[in-house]
Image (cartoon, rainbow, N blue to C red; front, top):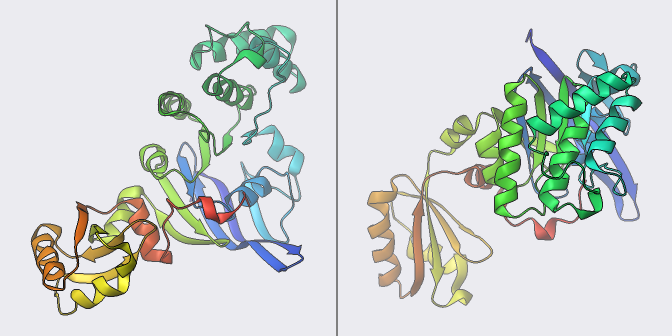
Amino acid sequence: MPDEVVSIVDLKKYFSTRSGVVKAVDGVDLSISAGQVFGFLGPNGAGKTTTLRILATLIPPDSGQAVVAGYDVLRNPDAVRRRIGYVGQSGGADRPATGREDLTLQGRLYGMPKAEASKRTEELIDLLDLTDFADRIVYTYSGGQRRRLDVALGIMHRPQVLFLDEPTTGLDPQNRANLWEQIAKLKATGTTIFLTTHYLEEADVLSDRLAIMDYGRIVAEGTPAELKKQVALDTIRVTLGSPALGEAAVRRALEGQATVRSVGQEPDCVRISVDDGGAALPQVMRALDQGGIAISTISLSTPTLDDVFLEKTGRSLRDTAAEGGAR
């Protein structure tokens, strides 16, 4: 595509561990257009962070090709670094300094004259609403304030592509919503944003396009609307009065129900995928009652990104705690 700013072809990165080889990135292909917010979605350990670190030239791939802003990450890493911004999970601010001092220093490190660095600092303080705390020591910042400063540091040199790795992890809902506003502002300036996250709502709200990654592979790609349309099923979730009965008992009770497409177990409920939720709900309730299965709660929902992930992998993105650390 003519306005392609990130291109990945058959990218691979494996790690050797005591228990064997971990295929962190296992043949990934992606194309990202300029000016987009591209969401990279998946549970912890899916390979999102490893892919991002390769694109940011922090680690080399084992094979395949990655081109960012027109330059190959292996052949021209310095040219890539001059054209990207990177905000990692732990941030990069010098905490004993003020936010204003950090921003000015960042500009100087990128070769800006002092006057230009100062001017750009003022622009970013205004753009990302840092005015109230720009002259305070970073140690005193809240989590949300620090993440906004991290984003400002990442775009100090006006990069073509900004990589954000789990930018809202650990933030409360108010600070998360505030950072979403700042990301939208950056997109309006023409910056291409590559956003890794395991928050479903975040990916849905912010992304023009997204990819879902699991076990080192891309399992789905498209706009949020396109991916949800692929599922095209409504979901009934049932919390059983006797949880020990589980998925098998529900499956037996629903045998022969024409609208039921699949039954699966989630951590705290049983998921039933159906063609027409409005028509299927009373039929499901009746069948469970006739099967002697008591219901504690029951809910009906239209397709979500989590349903897409369930359809593609058989697992829920919401249950990330057991997936291990970032990979």
